[in-house]
Amino acid sequence: MSGLKERLQESASYVKTIIGDKEISIGMILGSGLGVLANELEHAITIDYKDIPNFPASTVPGHAGQLVIGELGGKRVMVMNGRFHYYEGHDMQTVVFPVQMMKILGINQLLITNAAGCVNTSWSQGDLMVISDHIKLISDNPMRGLNEDSLGDRFFDMSTAYSKRLRNLAHTCAGKIGVTLREGIYQFFAGPSFETPAEVRFARLCGADAVGMSTVPEVIAAQHASMEVLGISCMTNMAAGILSQPLNHQEVLETGERVKHTFISLVREIVKEWEQ
Image (cartoon, one colour):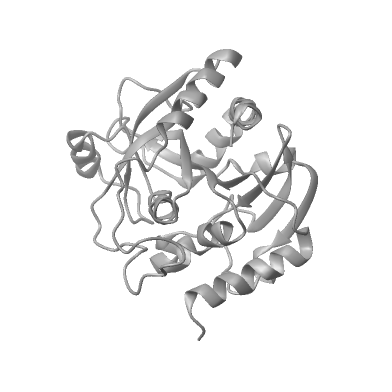
C-alpha cells in the first residue's frame, strides 16, 4: 500500500477532477441528524464516498456518506455529509483521512458539528454548544505512527485547538439572529454504547458539558495540519442518568430534525461572516 501522502493526493486529485481547481473556503463535517445542511448548498456537486479512492463507506443512520461542494453564505464550502467513527471499526487514521485530504486541497478552516449527550444539568435537550476544549481519555491517537511531515510537526500544541476568534464569531452571529448558544467542553468516548450514568458523573467531575463519539480525532488531525477549527455540538439527548429513561439513536435523529432550522440559520450566518 502506498504511503499516506500518496493516498491523500490520489483522493484529492479525484475530487479535483469532479469539482475543478476553484478555491474552497471552508471544510465542514456534519453530525448525526444535522446533514440536512448539505441540502442548503447552491450550485452543489455531490460525490459519493464510495467513488473516492481510499475513502471507506459511512455506515451510521443519519449519515448520507457524501461529499457535497457548493456555495453557502456567499462562500464555497466542502461538506462531509456523514463522517467516519472509531466505533465503526475504523482505525483513527481512517477517521481523520478526509480532514487531511481537505488540507491537501488547500482548505485551512474547518467547521465541525456533532450530536452530543448533554452532561450540564442546567442546559436542555436541543441546545447548541460551541466547543471551547475537549477531553480525550482513551489512549489511541490519530497521529500515532509515522509522522507525515508535509502535514504537520511530530509534536504539536493542542491549547488552541478550538479557535477563540471563531468562537467569538459564533456568539456574535447567534446574538444577531436570536439563538441561544452555550459554550463548553466536549468529552470523547469511543462508543458505540452510550455512556453509563457513572461515566456521565465522571465526565461532569472532569469538567465536561457534553459527551459524544466523534469530533475529537478530526480536531486533533486538523490542529496537526494547522487548520483553524470551530466546533458546534447539538445536545440531542440528556446524558445517561440525568433523566429516568433509556437512550437510543432515534432520539438523536429526532432532536436533530427538531432543531435543524435553528442550526442551519446559525451556520449560514457564521459562514457568511467568516473572515479567512
